[in-house]
Amino acid sequence: MRSLASRITLFLAGGTLAATTHAAGITVYKDGDKYVKMGGRIQLQYHQADPDSGSSTDEVFFRRLRPYVEGSLHKDWKGKFQFDFGKAEDANEVAVKDAYMQYKGFDNMKVTLGNANFPFSREFLTSSKKQQLVERTFVGDHNYGTPDRNVGLHLTGHNGDKTLTWGASFAAADIDPDASKLDFDTPVNKNDDFNQGWMVGGRVDFHPFGLLKFSQSDFKGDTKATIGVAAFGWRNDDDNNTYTSGGVSTSSSKADVDSVTGFEVSGAFRARGFSIDAEYNRFSADTVDPGFTGGMYRNGSTTLKNWSIEAGYMLVPSKLELVAGHQSQDADNYADTWTRTSLGANWFIHKHDVKVQLSYRMGENLKGVTGSDEDEIFLQGQYVF
Image 1 (spheres, rainbow, N blue to C red):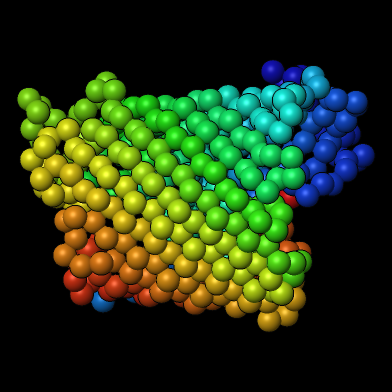
Image 2 (image 1 turned 180 degrees about the vertical axis):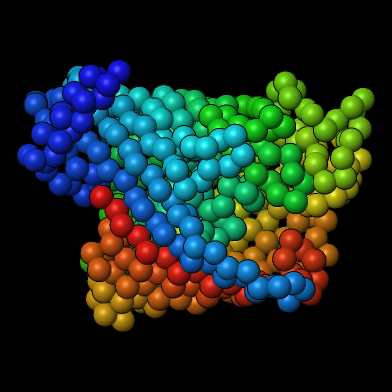
């Protein structure tokens, strides 16, 4: 084992001496169609929360600490795996993120098999390293209806000039039965009480002025726009309903989820250093117990509605950006609408690769409770290689 580790270390060290840098990752070895690429992201964050009804708290932690390795031995094939050491939870000391094999030999289409992004929510599909606000809003948060990475078959493609892009997936997906959330999780990092099921869905995006990638902020100044729609359906396979007995829930705070359907409409615009992203999501969810009331649910069901709008302007082109955003969430069992308003600034040292972000977020009626307010400060440094 020690000999193998020594050989790997020497290989990587030797490859690094002749490494070539690309937009994402560093190629440490390349010989024709064969290559090995390494990369990662480091996000060190300071977070302060000041709720009206409690004491202020703060902490410094690695929000994300994600190395990855990508490589190929054969033309049109590649494999990639990525871990997150910043998202250790309970027995999952390391969270698996991307873990897939991919075939790229078809014209205008890729076939991916493994743990990969499900094609729902423009904000979720925009990498965490390319967000304007430090934290995603409701519409891109897997805690509130948006599917996470999931294990299955994923197809992505586009037309000839990339003015039309699309994605479709069939995957296994888990849900945390916490009734205060609608939390999708990958089966790769599952907890013992997660509900298990299958999900199918897809999306289509139209780009009238040419492809607008899943990335926020405007560095180029060109006019770009996109509008997208997406939908999915998930159903419990009844293999792991730990909080239901005889059709009745055994907990007041946990509820096994029977089915979920989701719908999205989203859009984005870029021009002259100005950017705007907007999205609306709507989810219908039912619990296994048709009479359960608690958290988001009333009488065994909920309609969860999220919307968000984010805007930014490059005060100093490609260096300093002012940002603002507003988001809203409502559910059947909420007494009031949960809202968040954010203000902030981004200092780009090397665009999204090296940047410092500051966001101030004002939350009202947290989790639908009238008068439960909280102000938060997020300060984050990011390095991507």
